[in-house]
Length: 142
Image (cartoon, rainbow, N blue to C red):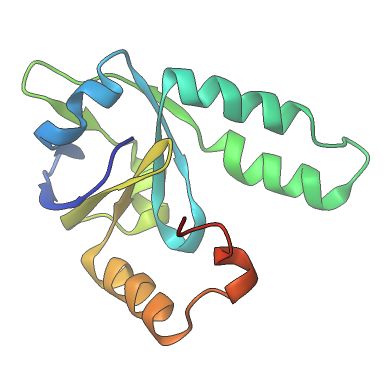
């Protein structure tokens, strides 16, 4: 499981160096797509296959399901690390996540996330200011 947060920079060609701690996680390739709260999600191929299965299982007759699949799936882009351990982020995804300059690469269960520092700080502050409801955390600490 990838964990930790690392500050990096996205270059003028839209490439971000993958932190050493995350390279093995995505070494076989990855899928980048739109995430929640204005970040990008980066799934290793094996995790993406499970995500696809979940998306395929959503009811086609439900408008909210179709909208979410459209949002999540249409933005997806396959990528690999280059020889300098960088990943190229397509322009539409950079625009969506406002990635230009400084970037936070953060670990999450089954995926990585790419954030602008301002959005990352706001997301972390929001959890501190309004922690999850106790019933969501009932099994969190054994």
